[in-house]
Image (tube, helix red, strand yellow):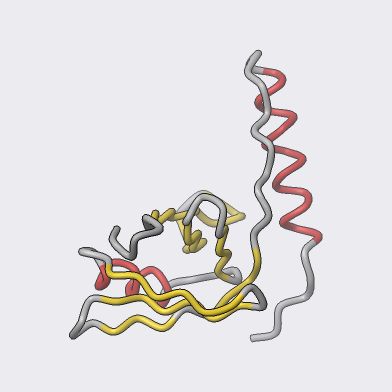
Length: 111
């Protein structure tokens, strides 16, 4: 299934900032994230992320949950190296944009 660019992602970020302002909270500054296709090794419990920024490998205790989320993804997976967060958007009832699942990795290779 081809992906047609980032207009929905930009719209989603603008909507989030507008909602944050309406609620009286400060919008979060979006850290730079890149689209990736992670590889999950269920036997070792590792996640390998290949991107233009390089290759990163992490151990994660919930590797099976990450693999399940990737199988249900409805948008490209995003990796934010600054925060060590892998964001997978999965289908969700009543949510047209899907629901984001965040998996956080520490820089020392552990979850």
